[in-house]
Structures are given as C-alpha cells and as structure tokens.
Image (tube, rainbow, N blue to C red; front, side, top):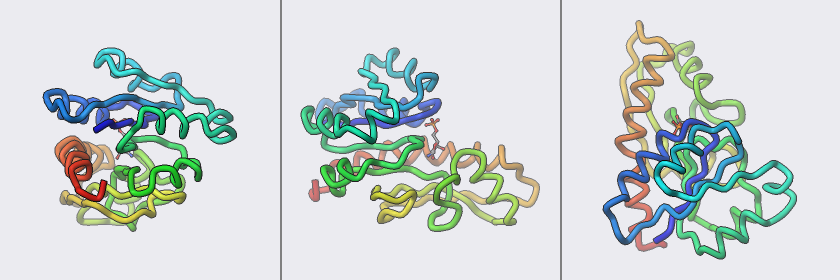
Length: 190
Ligand SMILES: N[C@@H]1O[C@H](COP(=O)(O)O)[C@@H](O)[C@H]1O
C-alpha cells in the first residue's frame, strides 16, 4: 500500500507515521506534499528519504497536476497532517473515502475555517471546556466535516493554558494517528 502525507507545518505527525511504518514492508510512505517552502516537514522528509513535492496555489487549484501525480503512483491513502488548504474537488472525487485528516479538537466543536493550531486550544480554554482531544475523519470538500473515524479525549483542568492543552493533544496525535492510519489502510473497504 502507498501513502502520501500532506503537511504545511513542522511535520511531527508525518514523522511519527513514517517511523510507525518503517518496519512494515507492506506499507510505503511514497510522497510528502507541502504548500509551504518553509515547512519543517521538508527537512524531516529529506532526513527520512521520502520525496517531498512543493505546490503553489495556482498549480494546486488551477491544474489537476496533484491528482494526476497521486493517481500515477498509485496512492492508496492520502493522509493530511496539518495541511492548511482545502482539497481540490477533482482530488476528492478521484480519491473517494481515501483521504483522512486529524483535527486537534473534538469535532464537531472547534472546527471549520480558521480553526487550526493554537487558535483551537485558545478557543477550548476560553470556552471553559473540561476536555479536549483529537478527531480523525474522512475528508470531503469542506473543512473538518467528513465522517468521523476515531476520537480520543484528554482532560482540561481549570488551570490549563492553551499550551498545556496543545501539549496533551499532541501526545494523543502521536499515539493514535499512525495506528488509525494503519487500521484505515487495512480496512477491507480499500
Ligand atoms: N491539523 C493539526 O495540525 C497540526 C500539525 O502538527 P505537525 O504534525 O506539523 O507537528 C496537528 O496539531 C494536527 O492536529
């Protein structure tokens, strides 16, 4: 099976996923795709010997180049890990039920456009939530709306700062995302 990981930022989840599958001969992280020339994931890709493709907005949205490249591999599963752009509709159509994402909160709350990174954790603390967590879901053409595959929870205490919540949520991401990617891949729907 072949996986492509999309990331716009540091890439810590991309690295955890690559490490998880490093000793699994049946699964290959074939590509890392980014839209940010300064993304930390680029250096991680180099270190892990995974080819990295950079896209600008025009090539990503005004051509079907990304869809053609992924179909030509062929990629079995597209894994979003901190990728900030909406998926082009032709890509969503070409990969039905084959694109998943992780969101650092318990959807459907604290999701949608503009709800990413520290903004999410600030909103969770500001709302006085007593718990947060992660949501892994299928991707459609709308932010954070696809069918939920898995959620994990962590408590939020009244003294927690957004940074504390971000730290606890990242522990859940690194613990569960690789395992759930593997389960989705092994799920006989694919
Ligand atoms: N969608 C969100 O973007 C962040 C990516 O972090 P990293 O994998 O680049 O460290 C994670 O918090 C993920 O839930």
